[in-house]
Amino acid sequence: MIRVKDPETGESKPKWVGGFTTEDEAKAARDEARVNARRGEYVDRNEITVGEFLDMWIEDHAMEIKPGTLEDYRISIRLYIKPYIGKMRLQAVRPPTVTKLYRDLLARGGRNGKPLAVSSVVHTHAILRRAFRDAVLVHEYLSSSPVEKAKRPRSDLREPGMIWTPAQLRTFLSLSRSHRLYAFLHLAAYTGARRGELLNLRWPDIDLENKQITIKGSTSVVDGEHIEGTTKSGRTRVVTVDEGTVNVLRDHKEAQEAEKERVGDAWKGEENGHVFTTAWGGPIYPTTVTALPAKLIKAYNEPEDEAQTPTETLPYVRLHDLRHIHATMLLLAGVPVHIVAARLGHADPAITLRVYAHVIRSAETAAADVFAKALS
Image (cartoon, rainbow, N blue to C red; front, side, top):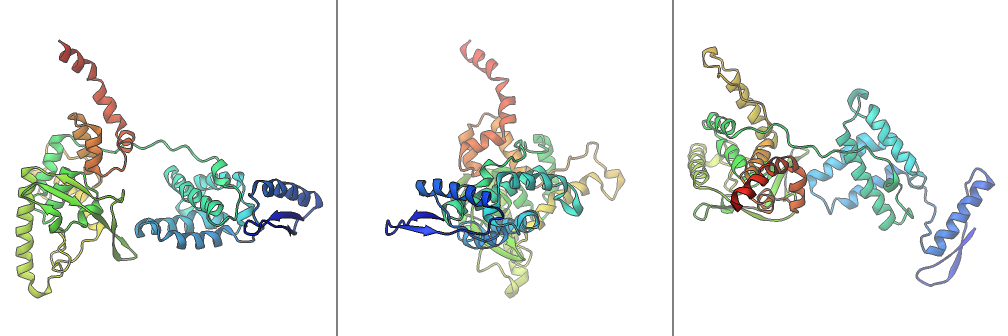
């Protein structure tokens, strides 16, 4: 038994806690509780489990994060947290408990008992860190978070994957020109915008006269339903485009008007005015455009007519790599980091510096010669 001051009345009240296996354990818990009580950090004993708390936490958290991120959290909790520590009492979790969780995930947390990628374990750590922080600050189930002291695997920030040369990008855009979504691929390469941001674009967001595109939000699919939300940074940004891109968008709008005329009353795009739609005006699934580069590159590298096989094949890249190519070319051309960050929609130029550190390092090698040439 200890006495704890009621924060509302200021009166000292007795608190009885039982359920210890030995007297020594009870005394140790009592001594720790007395210290916490004097600091105003005493937490009542609670039987809620980690799984029960996370279920409650994720519902409360739904008000703060995007639907796509929320679904990602749910999947990680279901696959990587609940099977291992979900039945444990929340207040029984200690730093070694969390460290062991990470070790187990790295050893056999993947599909069919295979090792789980370090990046997935780090992501799980980020979720637990937020959840246990709220357990301390919001719900007051804990006096401190065991996740903060746990040993997590080191995560080296991955640099972007395959980066095409300008000639390879020109080849790709040239072979894509006949596809009805060519404008999407062109805009991805020439603006560095994210997939969901481009799929969310409406025609009123595009100012062809002033060569500007306003990126206001993003589109994703959760449980088969299209969900619209803010951009990743939560901010609206304006991205300038060149005259060639303006012409590509004009041609795309004409082609869309022609599709609309062919479909007639069955056209579904009148209400939302999306720039990129299906052939009948409906919203495009993100996976459709994600798979598009690989299909086009394969058709180019492995044509049905062997006589048309290119002398030099095109390396495979992901759709997201067009964003990296855009940023890399700008940085190597000497465009200031803060301007590149603004085009990409990074909340802080420091993010751009971290992600593209290798590009900046390569540009740094010529800095001495540039300075000497300017001085001479």
